[in-house]
Length: 330
Image 1: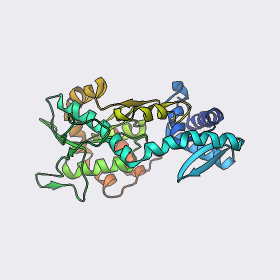
Image 2: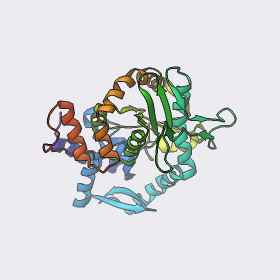
Image 3: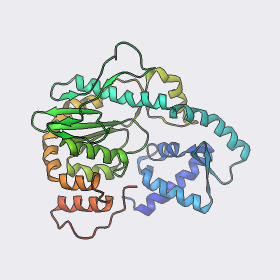
Image 4: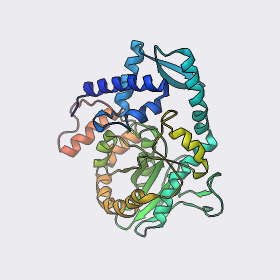
């Protein structure tokens, strides 16, 4: 296995190579081409990629250009005319996929896929539903009935809701969050901490479904009874196929993993109908055993470093209060 310094050197080399070919790119495009694509031994997770990119910016090899509060990146020797032309090709597409009306429908696309999968199984009783899936297409938002925020005297404070609640015959309550975004779900992201906090308030086993979830997140959360599932693609509404085609184009944003529509597909269906019910009883036991550490991290302000250290020591059966060196989540 490559060392951290070796991985960073691969990241530096790939960043330069890709920007030579692509001229100018978003950070998410660079992640897609380096963290998600290429030979497996050349794929570098975003936290190492970000570190390498910052080094190259500091050295002056990569230039960070901000347009409409969005950072773009190009090499220091890029001809100005070429830079302008490539920005004009890519920037309108990025603006289109960042419009709030579109991002809300993107969020619903994966939620609906999961909802359809929940409806096709009988093991889990699910709360939260969509009302009008058969009355119009996905060019407009569907109406969603949110799950309850209180269970048997327990309550999520504030105006916060889970995407879905479910109930398992032996594991009890389950809280599900679905994140159909390009960002990798590192353990220190607000979305992850919010999921943990909401589930702790309801005593529900946490489940996270997202496009990409790095090893460090899975490694730390699995002993705690948190179940995660990677979709490896981002759903776009079927009505936006033209925009999806442009966003997927390798010479434009390069988001090649975009898939259209809100049908669940075989892998998501298998996770929800088979894998999730099978793993929930064991996850409940681990969630109960690590409840205090999850509470400390997600609600009481414990640092990631301390949380990760205590989880690993408890898992290994060693003293939890000794010092621990950790490279961090990102």
